[in-house]
Amino acid sequence: MSGQDHLLRHTTFRQLQVFEAVARLGSFTRAASELFLTQPTVSMQVKKLSETLGLPLFEHLGKRVYLTEAGHALQATCAELFETMNRLEMTLADLQGLKKGRLRIAAITTAKYFAPRMLGDFCQLYPGIDLELQVINRQQVIERLSNNLDDLYILGQPPAELDVEAHAFLDNPLVPMAAAHHPLSGKRKIPLKRLLEEPFIMREAGSGTRKAAERLFEAHGLVPKVKLELGSNEAIKQAIASGFGVSVLSRHALSLEGERGPISVLDVKGFPLRRKWYLVYPRGRTLSLVAQAFLQYLPAKSRELMETFSPELSH
Image (cartoon, rainbow, N blue to C red):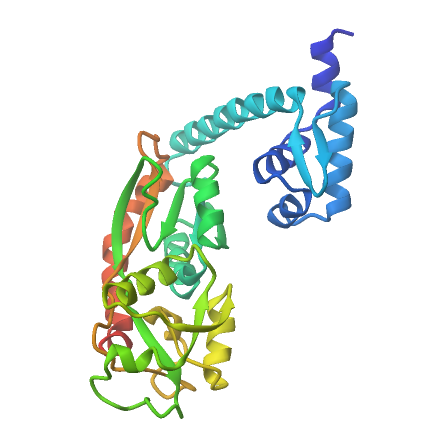
């Protein structure tokens, strides 16, 4: 049996997917989380692949894993193979028109307040399309974008460090929030300096929302008293509602609670911060018919979403 036959018989596509995730993320644990597998399963798949190839693919130094020379070679091969498979999938979907196909989208966490509805309506228009939506933090979305793992990406700010096409499709106003029973709730034209006298709850470092708020504060020579950092909007909303402090979030984060919920939007000078939601993909990438159809569908759906949100967004 030739070496090529041996690899084809004993290497599975799933093993290559698992290896690629570990290599890209530099962690068996993070790869397991992304692939919805247990860590022992990931370790076993990599071990079997390494045994098939006859060479170690990773070396462990402390808690970090690094690619060996064989690992680097396999990572390059995986990139070529996955890109070829993506092109084949697009070709087959295009041959079938929009009757069948798959749309893969990665979106930052705040997009979960509108993306499922937007995508659900699209799938109703094209019931033969399979949708794969990953809702993760900004850094993870950018990692997936840089590795060209999805068709489209939803971000609050296109990454300046990557060469991408970016289409603005929806307003994303950032507003200060406090508990409904907070002393500032209901007051008009609150000075920005007064807001920053309150304990502040911030998103994690690297968050687009946090960066936008910090730019405003720095422009006025102000520094918030950050008492708590949290990695999700829902956790921040719980902290706000409990009276722990104030925060700045996308107005979309309150789209389900309405005006009578436990959190109120504060009327603070300098707000709202006018931002947009962007649909992003690598510049030069050939989009499938399904992705092109979604881009064409987006403007009309965005207007519908704004009409739905307008009573809540018109603070």
